[in-house]
Image (cartoon, rainbow, N blue to C red; front, top):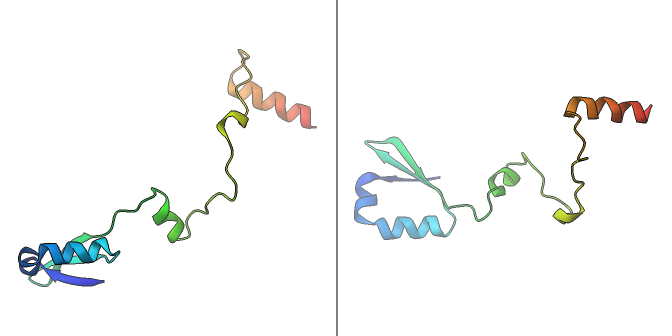
Length: 89
């Protein structure tokens, strides 16, 4: 990661920001001590997690209208889970 002193950032803000726009992360230092990091904004909220391997992207999309809706019963969730498990046995 490229390091840029505050003084250089003040003198060449446009150049440093151009580097960030190209995808480069820049660490800002004051007296040689890192104080901030400028990084490109991810176009997708999960992009960083995907890049680090913490999540995997979906292989297929699922339309929301195909998701099951609630049962509409008055039972609480625990009762529904117990009933579902009993049906499977």
